[in-house]
Length: 456
Image (cartoon, rainbow, N blue to C red; front, top):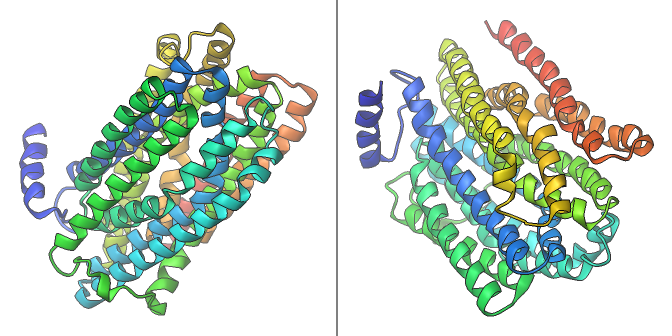
């Protein structure tokens, strides 16, 4: 198997494309998913360096300011990032149908959407920073620092959108390596600049914010360069940028429900973050450290979900329905294996991992509680994300969004205003995560198997 994997990897390096319609599947799913997972994990590790650097070399207030911004930033960004999933599905669909001219038009419409959405997010973020952080009960000793970081972060939005949409185009044809290298270089720059700006220049949250923006610019420009040099029909030409209605509508049809799901998740997470903030800055700082590993373990789920979306989209468009079923089964088994391993590492070595972020006992306590009550169970997300991804690949984007809205988002908000209201304990609050994942998983699996039976 390893010999086959590396043989295919060598071929893939030359063409930057995976044949998703023919031949074996497991090796191709791994070749597609693992670089994607690694790239997202690297991105999170580099972002978590912001938290770690200010936690170690500044104060727990600065640490809380950077970390507590995550839920609010994701609330505003996820809708537009979800649109990149629409770009992935639409381009992959035309690859499956071998409609060359439509691939070219879809590519340029995708990049145009990226630029427009990036500028809109930049303006929106600058205007709403303080009001949204006030609504989240951000502690008074953290507020000014949090607003500063929030506004600086949003100056990078046009580049974040360019990276996400450009990477989605490359991944639609199976190239998950060049997005990885782009992110890796940007991340290394982020870490180096964090250390310089915080330790040497003493710029605190301003320093980590600027480092993040610069790293996003580097990653985005690399993706743009790859697309400019890409072979037809994936070549990017800025003179051909346009918002062609037929392609924009298709991207929005798939991407908006996916983005709404991410946005709705963020609304529930904002509610949870508000509850965390009510417990004080130590709880906020500890959660900010541990939540990085929520993201890291989840990225294995996200990678195999992207595989399910892309492989299913191509094969469904080509009429290979039995192959779609195999894609689902292999993506699910792979996701459970890799995510389960990551969750186990976080649960077993929680103290050692969290000690890298803080030496304050109060902060460390809250971080370890989150690791045990939330991160350790994150493998459950495969059970609703992968069937949801398969449904999107078959063109059914609304159903999984509705299920997640009810099963996760509404459920979590109700939990915060009932169970946590009467029992305001951090561990009780963290238990909302596995409980909501269970509800969403049961409903999404039922929907997937119900639709699959109708299809057969």
